[in-house]
Amino acid sequence: MAARTPRTEQEDRLPTREEAQAAFSPALDERQSRVRAALDKLAADPPQVLILEGGSAEERFSVALWHAARLNCPENPSPCLCCPSCLQIGAGLFHDLYLLDGREGSIKIETVRELRTILGEAPRGEGKRVVILAEAQSLGVEAANALLKSLEEPRPGVCFLLLAPQRERLLPTLVSRGWVVTLAWPEASSPSPTDLRPWEEALADFLASGRGWFDRTSAKGAVDAPLARRIVVCIQKAQAAVLAGRDGGPLGPLLTPLPAAGHLHVNDLLAQCQESLDYMVSPALALNWLAVRLHMVCRRARLRAAGRPLP
Image 1 (spheres, rainbow, N blue to C red):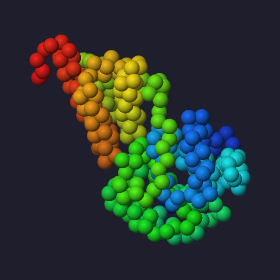
Image 2 (cartoon, rainbow, N blue to C red):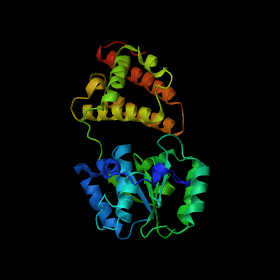
Image 3 (cartoon, one colour):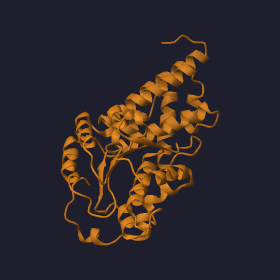
Image 4 (tube, one colour):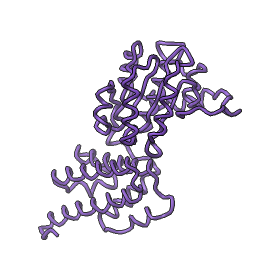
């Protein structure tokens, strides 16, 4: 959405309240009430760069849309979520909302350069121009440096929202220019989404037996980058549950026997897999790499528990 194209007849139709508000639903969850209160305090004089970390990718994006509505709704101090501005923001059709979407792949330098030409213009409405960089850790080094040049030049009326799982996934120079707001982290005990359960079960079988996983990942179109990231998050949640003494789902029995050093190793493997996905490594290859190494970690723990020599 960095560049505006002529609007189609479908885009000219104002979205219904139900259509637009579906996008705000995760932001309105009670878990994020503290975050909404923090953004309310910032709205009077919003920082040019706001970093939203924590939560899930869906929650971060929803909170970003909610904040955009907060800055542009004529019913301030609270977005009404039913006026034309709020409805258009919820549907992604607002004239002063721009999206650089890293959820589907890396954010290219060409996209950032194109955006810079637009930022020289004043906002078209009475509110703020909001630029959302979804999963900003997908910025390539050149694109991140190009963005820095834009941030070094004051842009009256423009707010940048950088969304990332953790601020550490962004260039320190970007973080140093922003105000960080942390969303409520996903609850480790919450069940995995229905569509991810088969992946968890398949990975648990592979960690125990070393079989079956590659049959799932090798199917054409079976894994894309967003799904791979969600699978990594599922493993993180399972590990967090185990460390807290709770049920870790299908992966729990495999992760529970790991010693402290084993869990630290798992953390490193998950971070490396996330980094590979950010750098556009094939999602299937990244998950296969992760599965093989997790299998080795779990196998070593089983051998150690049985008093057998380690390979």
